[in-house]
Image (spheres, rainbow, N blue to C red):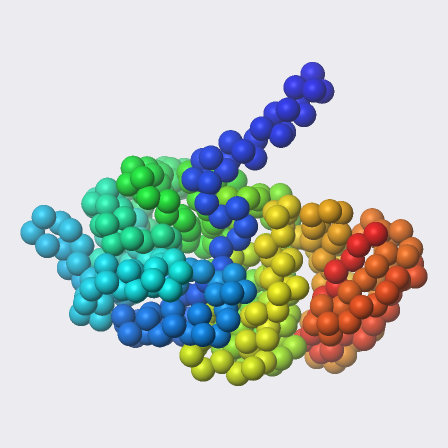
Length: 389
Ligand code: GLA
């Protein structure tokens, strides 16, 4: 009996990985156009992002996907084949260009008749659109519920269970359409975490699923989203990841410490790392955060386990992510407006006294710790540690 359960437990992750197409063994890394350009994005901007991804060293650090978000769509032709609009004169040419740089390209659609920005969606054209993406050479699809909510309201006005089933069916329809193309296309669900998508998304082919509404480049919104992710760790793993939305590192007025909090929290959450800033004009500080290899290694750790909160006392939060080989990444976060001392008790996170510690943002070896480690954490700041026995 016990042996049976054990082999079932070993077998399950590989079943899930097969269901999710074998893509996304670690969380996807790349760039997406929305946070910077919103509706203004054009072919030229996407090419420039691909160029900058390479010249800035982001590609070498692991950022691979260049993703076009909403507003690329034009009209359907007489056969129903969707054409891009005048901002994207040659989608196949653009995909070839991105591929020529050793990168991958992503696109965006909705199961509804229209997208959030009111452009053409894939409703009743799922197979056709999936074939079009595959013919262009698309590697990633973000599928945003938006316009489909209207269909749910029309067809199941007072029946939430039916509406939820309609939504699941719509995501499954595109899953089948994508799989039928034979092209590996990373499938990213975007329905803002409704109906506990983490419970059913992977079985419908989701490689990732948004867990919240939209992020914006403010301390309040970024932390509201990031720190609300406690408890979701068990749903993530190779091939299927929780997605607390794209990065705002380098956007808005986030300070150096706030950007470090954002990046630290997202890597502890094993979140997709999709930069959303202007890659062609990056201050050194921003680039240093996005490219920090020790930080990225936490997100991309091959064990594939998401981290979780281990304590929250007022504005002080400690989050821990298990790493391959028995080590752990630890974030000591201070959400307050003033610097605060914080204490990590090794025993509380499963380490004996004498564990080896490395302070990642300070790039400083701390040697072996006593049983407690006390450090002052800046306002709106983080101390990010890597511990090993
Ligand atoms: C929704 C999504 C965003 C973005 C926009 C585009 O709001 O959550 O990430 O894709 O639509 O219209």
